[in-house]
Image (cartoon, rainbow, N blue to C red; front, side, top):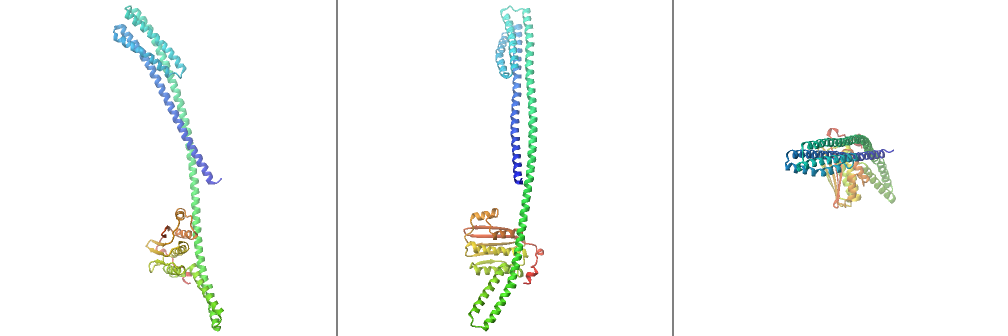
Length: 443
């Protein structure tokens, strides 16, 4: 399986695990809120039980107080307490409606409370009729105390049942939380491991791409170097071998023409040899100008620009420092090739009527700019060149690779008024500038 496909699968699985973790967290939070509602429900039931207990106890106290004192205010308070009991039981039934056992206990509690309230009403009625005696009230009191004990037992039983349910629900919630936390932790760890693996795979692929890119750049630089060496060798062979043979043939033909002055074919052949010799020298110069090795960039650039203007009929203004010191063979060769390729593109594509070349030298940098007044480049081509180097011709690609190899940068700017090519290269220290090769100096 390809590394890219494997990386995508692992990344997708890691995202799936993170999604499951999020869903699990959502479910755990939902169950936590549900457990909190059950806890609140239990508290409400306990409050309702306490309210019933309080009302029943208050009813007993107000009844005893009225029987002892005959104060109408305590009778009124007693009646108010009795009136609140139905509402309290209704609330208790509503809260325990989901539990049949609690409903039965609630029925029993209400029945006991009704019996106790009935005894209280009988005791109060005896007091109001004047038939109340100590023995009668004592009997009623003993009976109500027994009912109160049963009511307390029932209330306690209901409270214990609610506490049991609460403990059961809390324990169930705790187990679910532990399970959810364990699953979330396991899922998160697996997803984290997968992300680490994906990161390593991506890093490895990126490193491989960078190594391939660096290898390609080194190969391109090597190809350019070999091409320059071949061009230098071909230029020397054309100049030293073919050029010399053509010159010798021209000399012999001239001698033959002196003995045959009226032969038109000899004169025509001599003119053809002159033309061939001139083109051979031009081709040798275009391949590699000998002045670049012998005199340096300034002389070679001036001679090449003059020849270009004559051949193309495009006026070129060259601004270059006079008595420019040697910059080193790699830098001079790169600047000359950029100059050569830039003028070639101007002649082929710009349709301009004039061009300007500026060379500026500082202690740390050499800057070359070439501007024409031609038709310019399309925005698509210019954008592709700036973004990823697409839409590059062979010449521009070679220029960019040469400049990049020396640690410089190449920029293009273009509009309807023409195109500007800018190159900036770091200048090597003087003690590191190599001299021209001995083979070049001897040509």
